[in-house]
Length: 234
Ligand SMILES: Nc1nc2c(ncn2[C@@H]2O[C@H](COP(=O)(O)OP(=O)(O)O)[C@@H](O)[C@H]2O)c(=O)[nH]1
Ligand SMILES: [Mg+2]
Image (cartoon, rainbow, N blue to C red; front, side):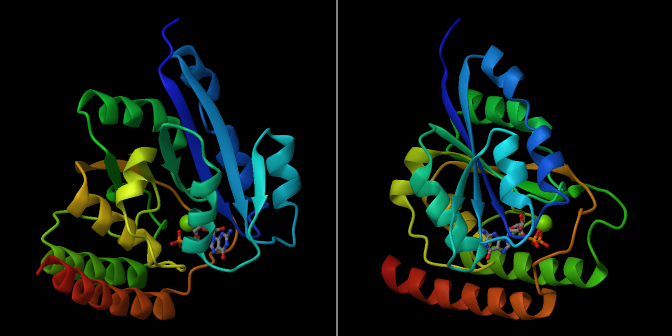
């Protein structure tokens, strides 16, 4: 069998005992191995006080504990531990279609891309995103598009598929939820990137995002990032 390299699936999790099992079981490890990929699954646990770590370990994931708070912080720590040529990310709450990994990896490889963002608005299950959250997302995505001239539909999607090598060229500063928009700004302005539509499901367990607080923070971050980006371009 032709060896195709290694895939690292990275999942941040904070008190996700309800969703982590379903999430990990939906990763088609055997299918990917048959296609010639090695697969590692890394769960970056933020110090969960429930059974998240235990469940993740029992399902064969490598668990890294990152006590410092924040979604971006968790990813930056996870990336350091990843050894795959291709990295795939997503939440531990059962919302993202990990079963599509083989298809997304094929799109990345066949088109010689460095980064794929996923667009959840393409096929969104009813009730999977509140109206407030949708409006917030639209404002953030529109602002990002105007400031950075990037044509994407979902600036807050947490599922990305990318070449690990690209990370060397990206400057990732955000420790919180703003990390999601930052990695897209960096990848789309510095690498070969596209967006692909995916289905998005209702969450298991409680959400960790504070829609209002994180929304404002993410908006401010876009302007801060844009200010630095313009200065750097000159
Ligand atoms: N390790 C770690 N994971 C986090 C932290 N905050 C959120 N997460 C995880 O990051 C993912 C995204 O959070 P979520 O509440 O689903 O945000 P939403 O999908 O934007 O509503 C989930 O898997 C969370 O468990 C954190 O501080 N540390
Ligand atoms: Mg989520």
